[in-house]
Image (cartoon, rainbow, N blue to C red; front, side, top):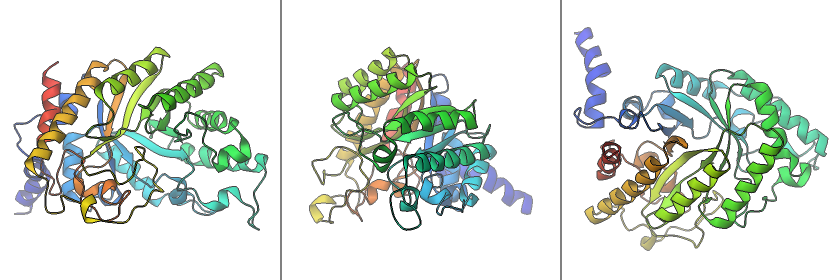
Length: 371
């Protein structure tokens, strides 16, 4: 009896939860093109969410942590590191033979205020902040040396006009903080791939700023393996032409491209902002949450068409793209349920709230068979 139950859980359950066993898995369909990844949450890497685990193990060959390697989670106090969650995340990735990503070492959000202050609350000196930056990066990256294969070293350092964002890192250290972050990470694990990650790089001013930034790092001998295009997309943005041109422009400077946080928002825009600034917060209104009881088939088909168009561009550039990662596993997991409007019902991914494959899944899978 116990052997039969074990067989059902380990073999049949993933098939039942992820759809027809006759369909190819995403990771297999795109095996000759790029890795297919997902951002996973604590319930998934702790294996409490068995439905999510079944999808991850079946469909993906790369994982990114949503939060457990961000500074506030892994280094909440000056003299305290908390590796419980990140250790479990890395162990999960190894168990399921994933290409494991570390996200993220340097960001202006989800970084405790103590990082930039002394014990009296005053701003610390440039040298002191560089010391904290080095200690943090070398401690975190060093702990997972040889296990985490790629790191988002710096996240979202650019403003929409392409200039460097005036974050505490920038104000205290200056532009060199980017160089130093990459240097410290490379010293801690010389074999790990190092990435710069940002959103809205499909917009020309910001893309130009990213290209100039990467050129400066390259000129200094900094080993930037790839730029991460987050891919927090809309049904109508970026255009196929923008997506194509963006990937091509980075390829021209000899750098790989990763699609790192892919989702497609089908809900009405709550602001004029097309970026992914997590500090945005808009009150819930009925007109901003039109699909609370379910997504109409017409919109399902729009989503499928949109994903097909995006993946055709990714396939076209498969010699440049190493990885395409979805930001979440199912619609239930998506951050867009609560951003920029808390409490909305969002539908941005390939698997619905019950873990079932959506028409968008089939649309993506069909792209792989066309090439």
